[in-house]
Image (cartoon, rainbow, N blue to C red; front, side, top):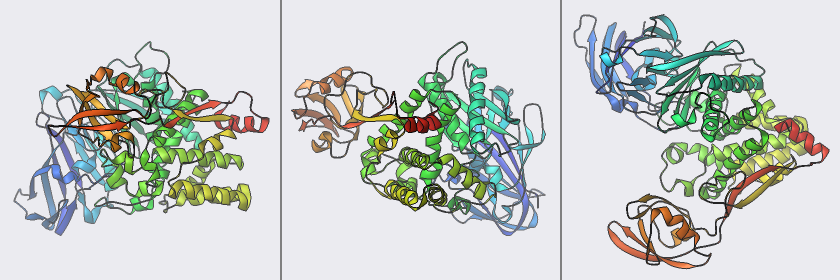
Length: 602
């Protein structure tokens, strides 16, 4: 049986891809679209964008078919070739679905390509057809799919080993700049779509160093025949999605360095951290695959309590790779992990929801967040990274490190192309702790693991960092721009517990901290605050109005709720210590200095 998909950007102005799937259809052949895609743990129901389905035989005669649920259809075939033609609406600018306009096209094949269920393991061919629209006449293609016969612009025939391989290879179409480079002799490319003036030489130089240190963690034992950084550059955006031989990224134009610019600003550092994060997924989730995901047909949720491993550990390493690659210095790296810890400490839900529960319920809590999310759960990215930091430091005290655990996990599962069972990394870490620290060391680390993974109390960051010559201070925030790290500005004078945004005539509440002064005063999401103690709120001066209040001072807050004017008394409280600063101790003891040198290089 041959399975061929033909995809054409048929109507860029209306945002429609046309798809034809040709295969030999037996009686009752079932086709299905995924409900979610790997790396993004939310049911997305890609079939909702499908329209105008028609099934014909080789002579063009109609073949009966019917839907059996929201994502599957059955064809009444007779073992002869049929063509299933349909259109897919594509106007999602994120990295998760598909987009088509006159400026660019992008798709994850999981959004466009039905699976032939009975032949999911068979090789498939993908034919990319150039658009007819005159405004798209100069479009090119960038994809990690293996080419069979393509033209100079990249349109033509590609192959994939099977359906899973197909849907793990996103496709970019449009006008873009491509810069090819090598890492350990393996071909890579940076693809920039929608960008302005960028110092691509600098970006590629930094990417090469970051990729090289990631390969070094695994002893340069992972061969790649290609890897693409598919980057959509927008007015303001940030995010990424990992794939086996590529990553799809979104960043802001201001995040990329302009020619002649020097220094490392925050936007560019964040972009490189995003690249480091998604590239590490090349191992940690794409080849070290959780068993629950490997067994999933993407039709419904696949539950695991190990997302702290696949995302949290990756979030710990992404900043660490910037340090190892020489992109940031040790003091800057400490600021980065202090900010990570600060985000966790500013999440009230950390005392309600464990890290294991956060991983398991990602489908409904993390990926369907709302105003209540910070009060109900904790991010398995952020707390997972803080836990990974603690595990790494404790392993280093025992004479080993988290790198060694990842290598062993790779040798046991990734290199053997076997999925990782639930709790696989934890088991490897415990075995390593026992090997290096005996029963006492393993017991101590197991207690920490249980506390971090299943408990809701705060982790002993200051204690762990102290034995590495790093002073950890948990302090009061120094204002709205203080996200952790080295101090700037003045300490906040009080705590209100409300988030919001300026609007005409006041301040719109978008979030309320659980058990804080704002909640006790009955402030709620959607309220429009207009006055404090009878004085009009002016958005530009609101911070100063709040700051003028002393802890324990009651004030009357007037606001509109559903067009009704209401008021209540709000009593401020003393500021909360929820912000971390990590600093290098100037003259640590020799054993402490040696541990720090091995970890941070200083």
